[in-house]
Length: 101
Image (cartoon, rainbow, N blue to C red):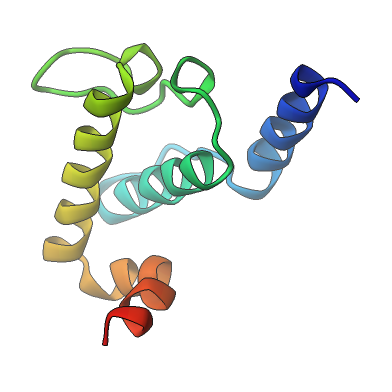
């Protein structure tokens, strides 16, 4: 199996297990951060990641960003989720929080 085949298999798994669904407010933010978390965890290259989220600051879709720009954007969305919807944040990042305590 080539690296591209493996990447396609992982991408298809992410599409199935972490679908992007249009909602409002907390649900939209939660599903986007959850999806970005899965893409990052599975080392999906930035250009193949979801372009669903668009930065208000740069006007770029997430899949158009350079790696560091994407990381900054992801961290800003993650921070927004933590500040505005702490229960949803904890649902996604409880394992990380448990390790830091």
